[in-house]
Length: 488
Ligand code: NAD
Image (tube, rainbow, N blue to C red):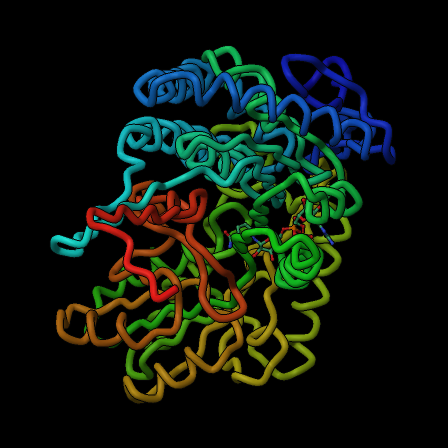
């Protein structure tokens, strides 16, 4: 447990500056203890951060691309050195199990800085020849000062997935972590400077919606990248329209996992478990609609039930714990309402569905991993994002039917297909309306693979070479080699 209450302040150009906005606090979801308190960043701090970012970008761009790459590589190295401490802090702030945080959060952040460290020297343009008349070339220019807004489920990972490509492309970043999980992003702000980035290149501005609104409307900010729910994405995009900012939107989902009868059933169950119960089910890409081909549906449910009931729920800092508490009490209430709705609308509760309130559980936001069968496409649990450990299983008869139903949603973040038929795997992957499709696995997000959603789940891509496109713009330079003919 934390012995002292930490301070939430802004990190701007190497200094900790108290915010002048609303009060903020970070609460440990496992026991309700206050981890940190402070105030949100408001306009004065954001103006300071913008001034610092302008200054820092000048120094950053005065460094060679190779030097900039070495700084980002050092960020990765420091993240790895402090892996255990950072993972512990992330666990305290989010409630995710310590079994997950070192690899899924800290390593992912480090991998991301390492990947983009190697790309600073290939932010290159094209050459377009026009015969003897001349040629054009394009320059890939940074956008300037970018802002990032994060969700609470993967705080340091989200901060890194936005900051590393932004910096690699020559931008500065103003990052606003979620108001409920600001702690590891503040550490990242310090680490980036410790690694040699000019102070101010990355500012961390804790706060809630108001802080986010200032960032999305401020004329000095060229781009905004938000990870959050669809309503937040729409609000940010509308705010950003006033100054025509570039936008990247990483939003919610209601993704489908298709299990065909020819799949290895144990692997299919494993994929469904990862797709629903990792990080307490608080993952945007989760495959919460599990379509299972009818002949194997009951066998699938039997195995999934046994595996869900064996999940060890408890103190997220205990290395044996496999599932921690949900992020906060209001979120637990919301998830429990979905469960009640599922029962009321006639879905079959196969396992789970209860809060855990005995003993130490009473202090935190714990619930059982939950599986519903006989779910219909029109049920609330099947249409809306729950963002908790609730799996819906739906039988299907044919590939065509499964695809039609899987795609019958306004979301388009991710999907999965479990089959041993290689032709079917690729046919289905091509037809699923989603930004990411996993074949015979679920929820793997290696950094070289572009990540993002389609339809209402998002715009733009993070990670991979693709991310650089969203942190640069092309300038075309036309070069004339002949004389200038003019009719005038
Ligand atoms: P949220 O939408 O409530 O908040 C996200 C962030 O936006 C927070 O930092 C919040 O302070 C800020 N915000 C809220 N309203 C704003 C506004 N009007 N203007 C500017 N900023 C505003 O989401 P959450 O509850 O923190 O996270 C859960 C959601 O995030 C889920 O829908 C989940 O699917 C989504 N998510 C998506 C991805 C992805 O990569 N696609 C990853 C993680 C989470």
